[in-house]
Image (tube, rainbow, N blue to C red; front, side, top):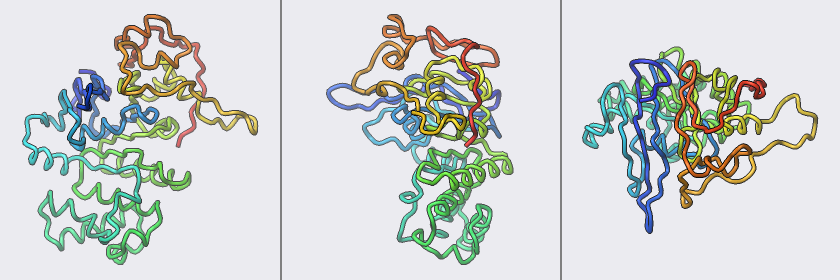
Length: 338
């Protein structure tokens, strides 16, 4: 199994595939995903909308809807989740994994006070008493920077801004003292200033608590300075993975280069046209045996359209799947940190 992050991983996925069992033919969403996350390290998962990022997280968390079939191994803290009953799997994930979803506006129940929502997982998974859960919820509200945490415990979600709501979601994710925190596009619905505050908070909490973290984003600038390792998804395939610094400085896959080129640059002239990636992401209905990026790749050749390239292993376990990888002559421009 491919390992991004060394020995003793908190999470590893081995040949993970995800298929929507639809009629008239099944639609494969994820193809042989293979990676691991070591303790106290942060993995960034990046790719455009439709790349398979959210389905990968849902597969790990056991949140895929009924028509979806997940195959392969998901090992959490040394335990193969497929060997557990549904109840035991839910208990293990609930205790060991915290998750921060994309939209804080829809992640909170508008009819329940935020304190009760934060303490819910502690009462369910840790069997905390109401007093213990209350005290811990107030403590976590303080940890994530909510003013007057004792009073705020009894407030409802509509009494907070979007950024404060996301801090409350983070507090709830920390309730069981998880070993792994997953932030699934956790700042997408927030303005730029608040995005930075939330990302800084996540980074501080991860370092203080020595948690592992998976940071999911479509924005390479977000993961550039905040992750140890990076995994680039396209069309449900891993196309490049490795240490973050290696992937940015010595990128091998044309898709990674295209994502970087499409980012706005501070040194661009005013009103300069932003670069885009031509074409559209692949449709699930038009599965191909070749490289999924071939229709949009400027360097694609006939073999790219017919055969999926194997994963090549380079220096420092830098991996990439491309028949004609980029070389070090490629632009080495810096990426601004989100």
